[in-house]
Image 1 (tube, one colour):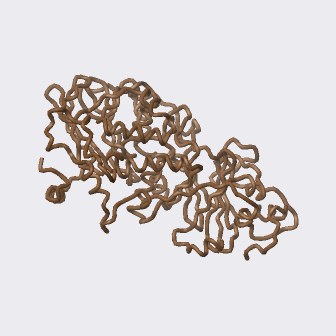
Image 2 (image 1 turned 45 degrees about the vertical axis):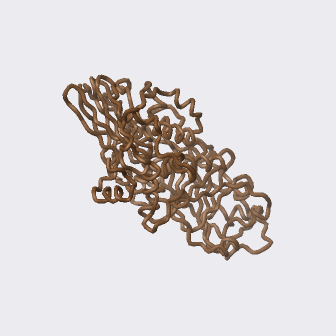
Image 3 (image 1 turned 180 degrees about the vertical axis):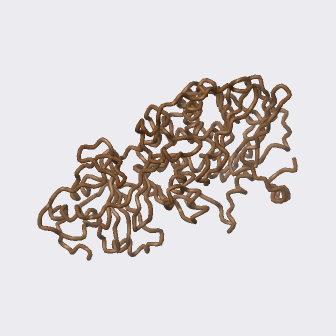
Length: 512
């Protein structure tokens, strides 16, 4: 039954009733973060590190459509995870839209966080803004091309990018097609708090409650069924949670608006404790009753044993105990004069493989091509010293291609980033918004070498020839020549000759 009118929600008996509410199933994800299973909206996930959907897929649980964005959106802890993006929402959004036919809900802590995420996703989903203006959009940036490059061969990004934004039903793809935002709100008055979900029964005596614990908090240790220690618990009463926590409410996508207003539909209430140190999740039924609860730390921990090539069974627990990762001497690696090391050869939806990324070796030095996250730590474990990597080629700014580049420029030895001016500026805008670091600071973390279309680029004794490919956002491929040997890297591209011919006939592409 729902709570009767006139109930005093701060009475100790309410806290006693709250203690008896069952704990929701909560999984600590190998790449970092937590997934909490609710009856109201399915799995709710806190923390969104790169390739996080593969954790859910490998564990056999549903990929969530609801994500809590951490207050700190990239990892600042020293170690292999330094610089890892903890708010990589692109592929969760893509998976929900293209595979599950759902919108992704992002729960954010501020208007500024939503603004920055919108800025990032507009850049990566729709392309740079200068090609999308309603009035006088640019077709290209002159600085990307050599002065003598044939004008008829320059791509028209305004037409190309718009082509990829048109969906099968004829409507144009916009950010709201894939994303929905939900905010934590400070309860304005007691009436607002009285409409929150409540424990199911009233008891005579009141006690404080113990809910799912988080690391480094005082209290009793919580142990998993397999005997591993999960963390520590801290006492919080229902009254404390209601009064000191900011709350976000998430409803099922099919919940009727009138039932939402009357508090007569299932929902999840998420409480953010002051400064985002802890979160409490309440699973609410149609009668406004809390049927499950969970609590976790506001710190996303990324395992130091995470690897670019996926997770071994002995690393899947997400723990960092030395016994899990025994120290071994790395193998000896002698870089070739000209060759390639494959870091990953799959895509963002493949649970058994890493996103594509490579190291191109030239004269014994490495140039990373779209490095996946954790590449530097993985290479070091394989005996490849960080200083052997002298450059990064960035083909475009989708998360499965640029997340590792962001981590690399923030950590380790200085590198040279190679890409076109358009793609480079997009990269800086994107990660300045995500990390809240200034664009100037990001630029000072590395050196930049422009790749100009139609102009040979000399680097490490090799010659590169870059070209734009046909993709949903600006993207490059290249050919590299070294002492009579060569390699071609196509980058992401639309490889469908009949469809390409139709685009030529429609005027989206030029015959050149």
